[in-house]
Length: 194
Image 1 (cartoon, rainbow, N blue to C red):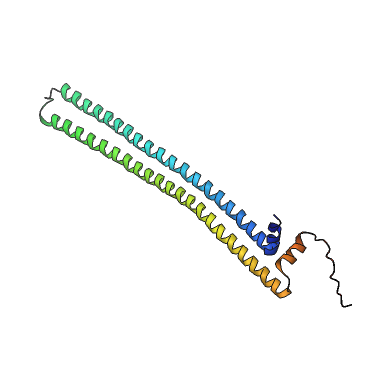
Image 2: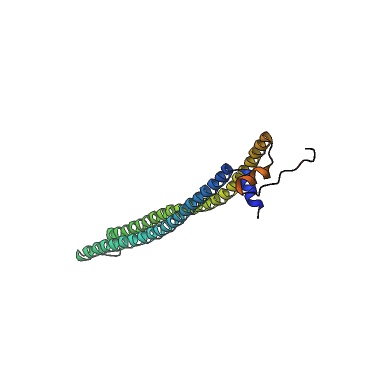
């Protein structure tokens, strides 16, 4: 346990601050990425709900168009019957068949438009899920990068301390111990030659 304060003192205060800043910065980046990933997943759910809504709205629109077309065909038949025309042959039958075909085509267009809109929403949902996955990967990379940054700080701090000690001629344990913990006074060596 006594080696830990000595190691910290040997490496230096600036390196310790740099390491702490790296840890704090990494924590903040991970928190931000995690939040953004949750937002992206929530947006994906909303886009999926919008896709379902687009399909349902197109089906309702198609049903409404069918009802309107049937009402128009019914009115056509009623007018033709009231005027004494033959309902199964001639121009009335052709008009009826034409109206039914147009109604079926309109129904198909309405459903297709809803499906196209739903496809766009589903693609948007997939994009949001991909974004969330990328943010989770970014968190992993933040941790790895922080590990490298901390290792680099520790190594460069130790190298700086070693250079300082080489210039001043002190050993790392002497200088670090004297800065951190009070030491007992040492007895001066007595020389026998006096």
